[in-house]
Image (tube, rainbow over all chains, first blue to last red; front, top):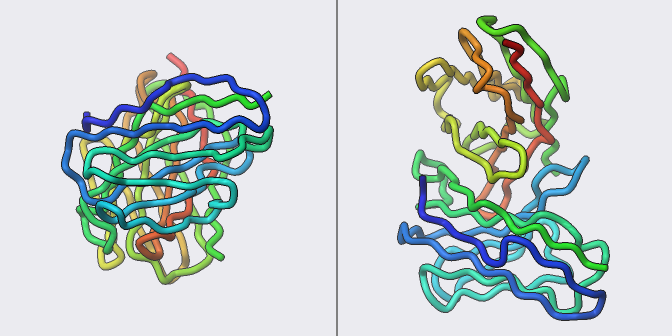
Length: 116
Length: 111
């Protein structure tokens, strides 16, 4: 299994509070991704990173920000959590994002976030 | 926007049966297509990745095919086992930040 951990694994918070989720990898992969998974929507890309300090938006980036100060860590921040952000959040990594076999994505175990 | 559809949403088969899972996508301009399995409460596990220039990939009892022109991929599972029970997801990549997932097919293999 690819070495990807996510913390925390479960979190319950209140509307309006800031929340930071952490993804840590030991594979030295260049690309890192944050997804959310919701019933009926499947997985949707929030943000991704293609290197240290290099990030870009995905399909559902509103209300989220990210940072990557080290190769191994990718942080997802909800500045002011809302109930619509209740979801399961997955981190993924890949060696590349350009179409070859090294695009294979490996996923972390997920973080279940509940915003009350 | 790319739309990825997986039909059926759920499938039950007896152990030992061969089966096919379907994935269709609306825009044929893809980099690659990847199949995953997801067990309840777990993350996704990569099964196979097919590059846009390839027609199929095989791994053990799994064979995935890709027909870009018709916007279809199939995942063939031979001699199904109860341990194959999971949700199977396909995803297409159309760019570095453009990855689109289907909502999955939940497979149950009955002993």
